[in-house]
Length: 156
Image (cartoon, rainbow, N blue to C red; front, side):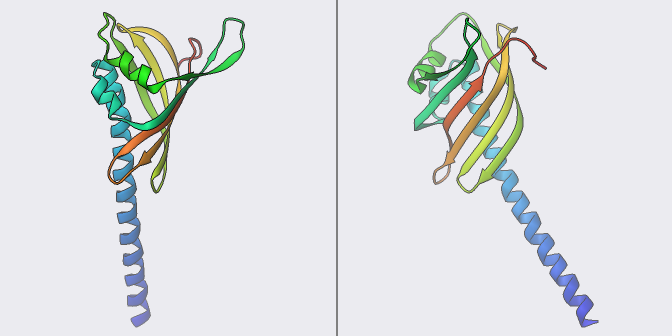
């Protein structure tokens, strides 16, 4: 009888530990998603302060695209230029619609993969994927690296 009670208590303990761990993981995933969603909300609202708040001070942005000669190129983009552009009033409305595909977190490092479709004034422009790397300082997840792909075909 004591053995059954001991086994039961072990199972209850392990289940509790697993549930708490899963809740903490889900909470961190929600915070990571919040940072990324804030980036795109700021972009849609031409709010450079909101966009800036999502980036670490030494963040890197790159894009992979096909050049006119058909070769794939990796291009650097300055985060400061991107932030300035997002805050500059323009007549078009930019809307990048993302779907979170994969989120991996290990301590203060998060890696996120999102599919996206980009619209200008609700007209489809292009699609691709974003790969984000985020770092959590004491309390906040910040984007430290983004690389994306861009294409006009094979968009689901």
